[in-house]
Amino acid sequence: MRKFILALFAILLGLAALPSMAANCPHGELDSQYCVDGDKMVAAPPTDPKELKDPSTLVFAYTPVEDPAVYANAFKPFVAYLSKCTGKHVVYYPVLSNSAEVEAMRSGRLHVAGFSTGPTAFAVNLAGAIPFAIKGDPKSYESYRMILIVRADSKYKKPSDLVGAKIAHTAASSNSGNLAPRALLPEVGLTADKNYKVVYSGGHDRSVLGVKAGDYDAATVASDVFERMAARGDIKLSDFRILYKSDPFPTSGFAYAHDLKPELAHKIVECFLSFRFPPEMQKEFSGGVDRFWPATYKKDWAVIRKIADATGAPYDRATFDAEAKKEAAAAAKKKKP
Image (cartoon, rainbow, N blue to C red; front, side, top):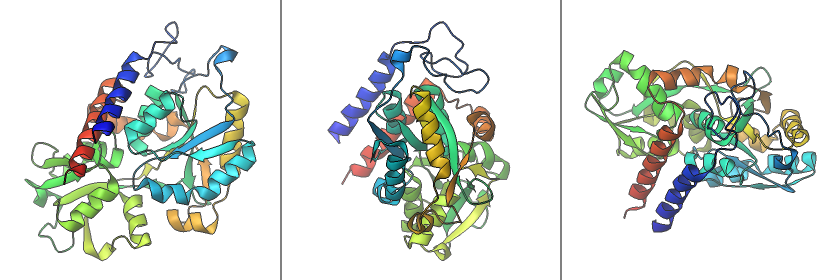
């Protein structure tokens, strides 16, 4: 645990120590080391050819919304395909937190990644990530909802019954696990930190299992994670009651680092969009998901940015640092005997 805390503070210090590399250009909402690419709201590639990267090994990661080991195995067919398609050696990097994943791309250790919905904006603004795809089925990209769950045998029948209760949120940067409930639940009588107690669980799966175990009275989680846990047999849907469902949001955004050589970046996008999930991946992600759909940050994450604005939690350095500290606290609490 001491090593984890020291590593986290090293990350935070590293973020603060990075120099401004793009002082004389428009930044938009981006960190000062990035130039905004026109009206796209993402970082422009470096103008100096020497700063463009063409690594012999591509490092790929997927958001830690559940146990990282689950996805290390689930993405094996895709990692093999991406390697063959790009002609590069590709390795899967199992990140342990949203903040660690963002920092890995910011520091240049991560080249391609799937960021969960909320942290995608942190990755764009602080790490120079360029979102380009979302998982989907043959008709459209995949979406999900924020759901409020309780145990089926609990006394809670409607959201307002949870006034005074202990409700699990996942992490401060999470859309469905924190920002969406703060923005949307007041309309049904629940206001975070005012008439119910927020407890950060550290993950959607932990929130779900915590409700099942009775550790929390309720939890706000992503519907797709909840459904995947049921499909794997980790939980039974009949053990829970859903008290609230939001309108749909885009799922995890897949992004590449802004400083990859354009030819490599274009090839990565091409490889993603031409890939079709084999049966074992379709089983893991369920819902008919079998491919990646093209997406842009400006258009497809507009609703997510709107929620962040409504909650007064912009995707900036201060919010990110606060989120990282909360993730560390949740991890430390989980490690206690």
